[in-house]
Length: 254
Image (cartoon, rainbow, N blue to C red):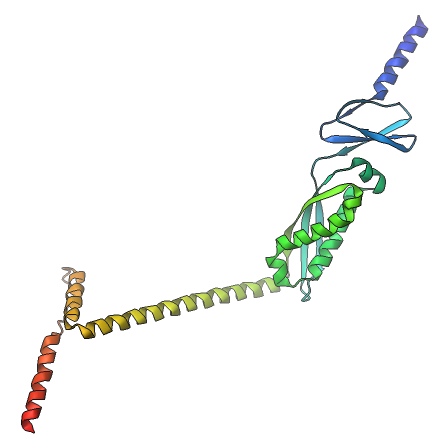
């Protein structure tokens, strides 16, 4: 009776030891006596106890940081840059067998690619083309890791930190650019206003009544406020009459 109980316990322990549960987002890589024997899909799986070892690999999109590091741009400007790498394992067996630590390998390769890409660009290009830098780094890392069973989905730059004196210089430059644009816009507005005034003066010169109409509009716009002082100019017709009379007297004198 005791032997039967012991045998039953041993059987139960062996059955429990042979059970491997793989989650939906994982893939199990099975090795038997050190040799690859296949992959385990999500769900309940059975292995040979003691002889089989199962490594579970997360198949979801993974993120690793590109640590902050100093990079020298093409125009010899030092800056500190960090970023983030998004990737996923597409072949769990290859990722386990060919690379000792695929996450560390991707991180190191991304750091090297970041230094190479940024080092070939000027400061203005680095500041204005973050998306392009990320794509270039992604292409380099993807080319290296395609035989690792890994797919790089995206690489983003996070912070670009420059020396304080360079920041102040760029701030003054940006302020000067804004002032220059404001001056150009103002001068353009003054030019358009002078052109419109010249056209208005030409119209009024051709039509003497237009000046009187403009005078009446101005008086109407002043309103009934008692503090306003209005000086009425001599009508244009009176000036024309004076000029004509002067011409007549001049002819009689001759």
